[in-house]
Image (cartoon, rainbow, N blue to C red; front, side, top):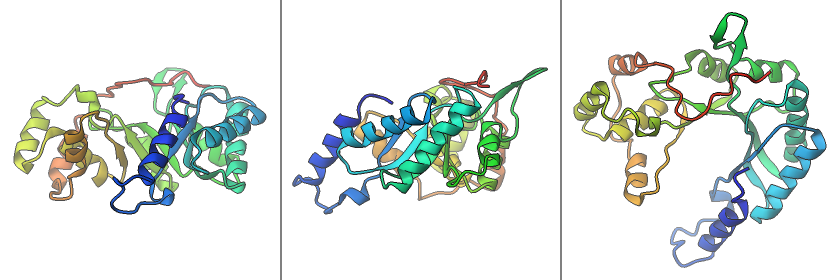
Length: 245
């Protein structure tokens, strides 16, 4: 998907065999995710998965996602069948989807409960998706979709949980950060965790990466969680595949 599987795999293997691996971590201690760039035929999806495994040289992929709902129903279901077969063949441990979230109704843009997720589940897959990776944060809560996912035992992976730093100085965020004696980023990560999501905070700075993980020392109160939920403005920071059929 991102044309970096070879480099990521090489880096993982290099670290595992290096003196820096002081905890004696093994391949099974590393969670490696990759994606299918676009939905198409079963054969094309199956080849793409095999190529991802081969290029990474990690033996298998822990989580493989369909990157988007684009391509139409037939392509989505064919691609998912390829993921199921890859799981059965041991090439993939867990399968999921990404950006399966919105459709266009006849009277404007509206979140339809489940949408492509509902379509996939209604097809009675041999292996249901375990993950839906979507943009989720207090300024774009996607409450109906996250509830639908969790009600069907689908883990919500929240990308852009830090709102790409667009709301770090929002009065509510700064006020609550001071109250809980944490950074705005830590507050946003904690919000995701308390909703049961798996946040994917992104940073290229070692200190920030470490700080973003240090969120176990506090818990946001119920009333403050509701205040943060109320910040929803459907802020899309990346892309929103609203035209997917």
